Image (cartoon, rainbow, N blue to C red; front, side):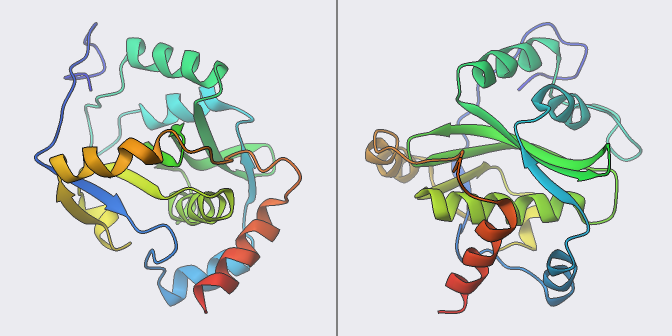
Length: 197
């Protein structure tokens, strides 16, 4: 992370407690579930990674500074080109209205940041991410730190040492983020069905 958007470098952090989200058992409120089923946005992946990470790095009222600076954006763009970094995007016509990005290594997905320009867009992107991770065989959804936004989804913490032990094997076992032959809403439908079992 950078100290702010104008910083020319970045720092590496290892939190004492690592925050994770449960992929299958993420908490979805009744109101959010109802909105998701109405399909208010078109869900795409990796169609405009550059725009997603730029939007995540924008400042706004209540968050005047951000840790996503130019070197971090450039690094993630390179990781995207290499097939490691991915975006989940919510589109309203030709407008990108929300989304998130992160890195997939084996069965581990490390969520980096999300943004929303319309109500619930980032929340809907997160649920679609979980659906894709579940269907693709991922085991870990790492959110790094707990914040108020993630608490509503059932984020929990484990000690960093335990996290390192857990991901050793998970990072070398292959999972599939792209799910090339699958439609986003079919992926979601299968995920919601699996949650009811």
